[in-house]
Length: 112
Image (cartoon, rainbow, N blue to C red):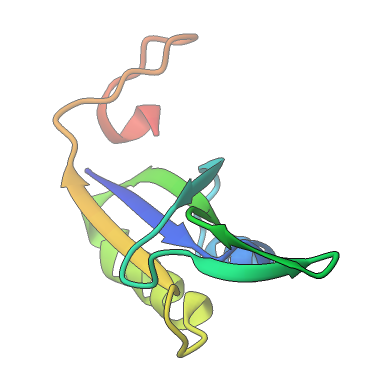
C-alpha cells in the first residue's frame, strides 16, 4: 500500500475528487492548509493599501491506496491539478506498512 499526499490549488478540488471517484477511489482526507514554495507568497491590494500574503491557501489531499492503483491516482492528480502556472502543487508517495480499520479490526488493503 502507498499513502499519496497531494498539495493542490483549492479551485481544483472538485474536479480532482470527481476524477478520483471515477477510477474507484472511495476515501480521502482533505485539509485546508497554507504554505509557499518558489512563489514565496504574493502582494495584494486592499482598500488602496498593498500588503504581502506570505502563505498561499492550498488543499492537501491524503489517501492510502493499493500499490497497483498508484499510477492511475498520480495521473489523475497530475492532469486534473495542472494549470500550467506556478503554484500548481506537489504529489508525495509514501510506503505504508500496515493499516487497521478500528471498527472491524480489518488489516491491510481490506482496511482501506
